[in-house]
Length: 143
Image (cartoon, rainbow, N blue to C red; front, side, top):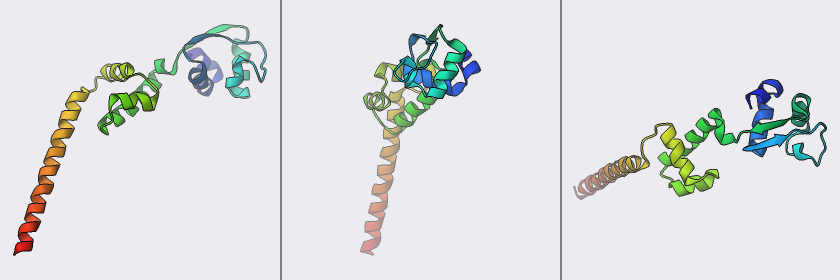
């Protein structure tokens, strides 16, 4: 995909990974509105044809792209920190739970169980603090 990005631009490479990722792909010699390149804008399709017409190219999935992978990791982490379950994260991002765990492991993230323990402890402290304030308010009202 680096070659496609270099010759046709990052926009074309990203559009292909998004719509055709994970497969070998024959680039036709001409653009047609109903052909395999119709999933791209006509401008992107013609740029690709100009460079790779009549060739077979491999289009990696967007998950294989390092920048996209890091961006996906950030999305996963934001949801983990918000207390969202791995099943719900997978559902929201259209990925598998296995990929959620693999991605977090690859980026060296803290285990979710540790994050949940920390969140639970912080919530407990906050609840204790709130209860203490309520008790102080009651004491002040009696005086």
